[in-house]
Image (cartoon, rainbow, N blue to C red):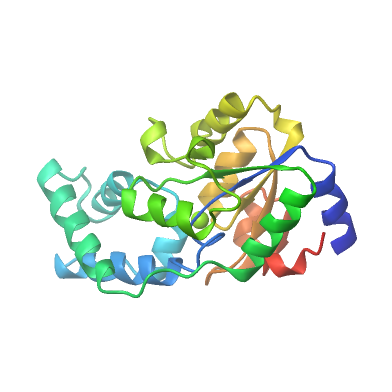
Length: 224
Ligand code: MG
């Protein structure tokens, strides 16, 4: 089966990578920080819910939790307070480490002449700057679509449609690598073949149900 995946990748002109949970082993910290931030305001939002909603903007995540718990949207003040708390908590965690399999895959893609893009919901300069340093041989600023470049975050197709538009590739010429169900939904809604790498705590089934074409556990399973 692995040879099949490799042939599919080699047949593409480029790969669009999600960032958190695909390039970085960062989701455990994000999940923990979100849960603790909500708990600080007396709201229960367990790590599994963070994983299920990964890919949403911070505002969308907070509004979703308020709709579920309070039957209303959060105020701008509440959004700012909870998001500040989350940012404060995660600042105390060690810096996220790149996945070795992601670095190795990018090195192989570069050798094969494939284009490398990153499509992330994150809009924090801190993470985008780290991305350019940690993946400096492979990722350039003009090939990153961040939360700053879109109006609608994942699961809306806009992030991946923006990447298609900017890169000039057609949907069938690229492959997306995502770890989150909403990220898979976003990529599939943009019409792109999607490989899910399940690096988190959710069952593989959730990624299949989101529409993933392939589900693996580690990018090092790919050996181009
Ligand atoms: Mg992700």
